[in-house]
Length: 163
Image (cartoon, rainbow, N blue to C red; front, side):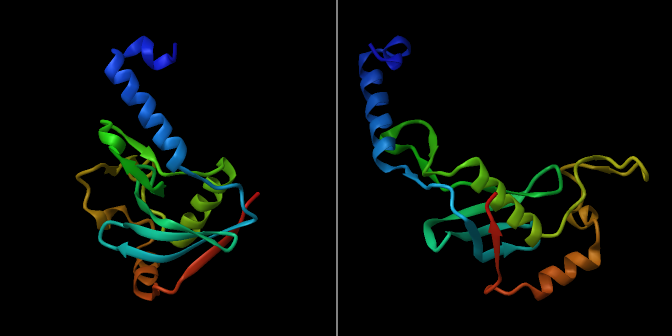
């Protein structure tokens, strides 16, 4: 008896097993590369979010990765996803990457995009940053942000060694 049988009636259990098999057949597993290259950025500078393409060594991952500004003031990336495979009421990662590969991708984003102020109270000024704070008030360095957004070229790419 599978674990799914314990939690779901027979029809649901069979469906869960079919979804698990579909994921096993369709999720692409990438081994840890020597380098990752983030490129072909499409950025919405008014929200510091967008997408990019990824090369693992010289192999291009066919799906684009999304990123957006999080509450820590950093941009965080999101894996390509399968949404409701076989009608399952859930989303699943379309690829698997090692922790080292994910850390290198995050390092590439950190090197590419300007740092913003995190949510919370600034211990020096007492200013509170939250979801209703105007975007421009989250700039750590407004001139650095403006320079980055004005000079960013679609051809830009960043290559990071994987440790």
